Length: 576
Image: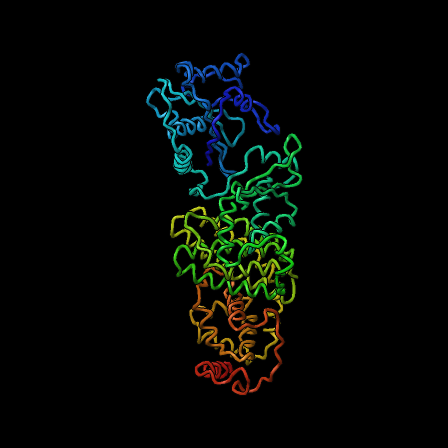
């Protein structure tokens, strides 16, 4: 249940016309009164003999108690209370009780017999509007300080008592929600998101990995946004506003939004914090591209870099101080934005959803020390400058590799936030992890199929050796892994690591103990990408030559591994 305190106004009758009207998009149905301060207020919606002006006169009557100059300029209090989409439809009686609890909790009508006059109007199944006059019956002003937080606290109690969807409490760091007018405008234009939401996503992508103000503004313009900047008397930039080219007001002018109104961390000073931490000075626009052309890594190289940076960020979130961890989490949002922008179509939608969800997890009251997140921000920059990646070959495989690591990074962020009672951020990070799982399934399908096929073509003694290695190194997960469809891919990867000159037992041990595995849908898949990252193996398939099926100790893969070789021999004798 979401209560929202709207901006105070001065026109009671104007608000009543809206509440009892058809709405801006014919969305209001059967407007009627469900509750009022005395339970006897006239209802212009259900009683044809009552005019809206009659209700306005009744609500505003306490204003007559005030002397000259005492009447407040903004005397109209307005609160909407909306149920969640999956909540049951509440009756008028239930909404009436919710309205009475809201005005009591916010101090509008605390129950002392002299509260403000108010009325609750229902014009849709899922919400009500409460209108009140901010002068009490005794002529005093109500104590409605921090009424928004008080309304939210009461909503949490109502949700528990009515068995409604439980909304996680906020901390004031969330982005501003679109207004009803903005939502209806988007519906009329046939768009799923409002202009405010589209701008926020575009601006966040422009921030991802950007090193200077000039680069940031260049990206905004390249994305097709209209950009205005304000300048201080000193000539320094003070702020910026952006608009969608097709988003116009009634006068045909573009509707501009300041960065700070899109999200708290998109104000120019907050964006500069990220730039300053990179050690790259802001340069004039005229020299930005010509004198310092960005290096363009290949998409696969950029994804491999991002994988290493994400893994390093995991360690900071687990063991670093709060400022460093907050910076890593914020920079993770940049990597997700950059990856969503540059990935192949079959994984892009889920990556976009993951980035959109994680956006909420990237902000909290913990101040981010961005000097600790340079590696992740550079990785985001490499992703942007590497350009779109193909969904196959090494590009597709490294995309799967980085998504797999980002999944665990999102879970680490969720755990970090949960420990600090950041409920909304923790929920957002978990939601992002769910989308990352779906993105991984799409991105990894081809590369994992190739690796599995490669593993199935291994000579039987090599497969036996790999299984014995797994049992000897990680007995606690061995049987689960051996039963997974991805086991042949892991066997092939173990063989690749041995061919490349690594000690596969040491690598496998490190991969298992590095981080928990119980949240993974496929442990074998996770170990594949960890081993290939740690051994710096190509993410795509490397051909393994076929070997004879002679005695195990004659295979190059069975070079002295102590107990592992013994285990393989025992296994072979048992099979005989």
